Image (cartoon, rainbow, N blue to C red; front, side):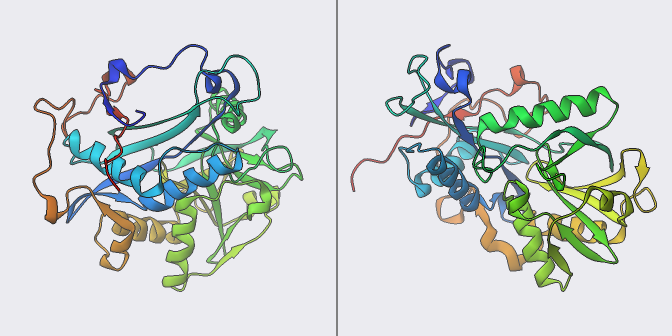
Length: 334
C-alpha cells in the first residue's frame, strides 16, 4: 500500500477518502494460477495496462509505472509464499481531499491486495435474467474505464437478480441491445458461430474476452463482434459469460427460458477447456501470457519470517484473508 508491505489490520483509509464518497477509483482483477512452472499471473501486463488506461480516462496520475506495478504484484505473492490459485486486486483511488468534487489536488493512493481464490460460481451453469436496469456508458461515463463508481449500476442489477432467484443478470444498453453481465462480458453461440457485443454497447473491454477472441482465431472458431438483440438471447444455441473471476461460465437459462439443451453446449465446453489449458500453462504456445512469481533465476525469494497466510488458506471471508495488502517500495537509484 503506497509503496510498502502492510499487514491487513493496518491497511486502512480515512473516512473522508474521496473515493469512498464519490467512487473516484479505478481497479483491476487478475488471477494467478498454479502451473507446471509454479505460480504464474495470467496476462498481468495487460491488466496493469488497462489500470493505467482507466486512470488516464479519469485524469488520475498514477505514481508508479506499469513495470513497477507488475513487479509489486509478483513480489506480493512471493512475500506471502502463495503457491495456489489467487485473486489479485490492484486499486488506485483518490485519498483525503475534503468534500469538493474536484479531485485535481487530491493525492492518488495505490494498493494491491491478493488472496486465495478458486471459483466465483460454484454451479456448473447459471440461470440468469435480463435486468430492468440499463447499462451506463457513453456519453455519460467512459465505459472502457474500469472505475469503482461505475459498479453501482452493476450492483443494482446483481441485487435485483438475486432477489428474484437468479444467479446473474444481463444488462441492455441505452438502445435496448445486449451489453454485458454485472461483471462479465457475454457471448452467445448460434450455428457454431460465436457472437459478442461490440465496444459501442457500453461494455468493458475484457481481458478474458480478448483472450477468447485470440483463442477463436487460433483454433478456427468463427466469431462475430456485433450488436445483439435481446430476443437473440432466447433463440441462441449456447451462451456463456467471460471474465477474470468467472473465467468461462455457461448460461443454462435466460428469463426462465432454457438455452439449448439446458446444459453447457459443445462450443462452450471447447472454449472452457482451451482457456483452462492456457491459464494453467498446459498449452505452452501461450506461455508469454504467464508471469512467473518464482522464476528460476531468483528461486531464493526473501519472504517474511512468519508470512501471513499460506497456500493452505481456505477461509475466504474478509476477516480471514490474512492480509495480503501492500504498498510497494520503489527501488532506489536509476
